[in-house]
Length: 169
Image (cartoon, rainbow, N blue to C red):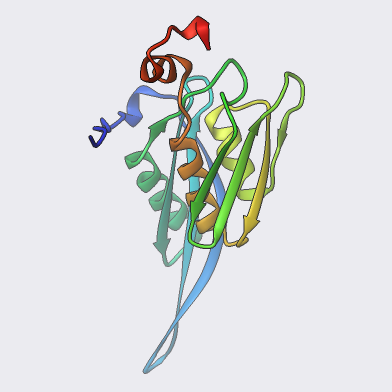
């Protein structure tokens, strides 16, 4: 049975944006080269565990970032967290990129590389260990991270699935 994902309203959160990558792109045409910029942006509200990503292209960098932010606000998602970490180990995949997320004890901090760190801090995850395996392409790494975050389950759902109470787990 497919799960129905309801769209989150971006206006109801205090979203902070973070630019992950800016890429200068050229298109070769008859008269020469057309320059443009592509921006990969992550937005999130750390207090309510909401995060999203988006990409924007424009002739100038600020407009590309603005478009990326608008795109990111359209695909926000809520994440299942414990107090300051994630509930269990999870592996996300996209293309040739894999991202491993492991819960960490209080005081560990965010142990993550560039693109994964941006997602973790935007989501409000304070203690987590991560490992990015395979590609270093920021687009694929972020998509693999979001795949991992989508796989996170909370205790109540797992308990209901197993026919037990949350305290029995």
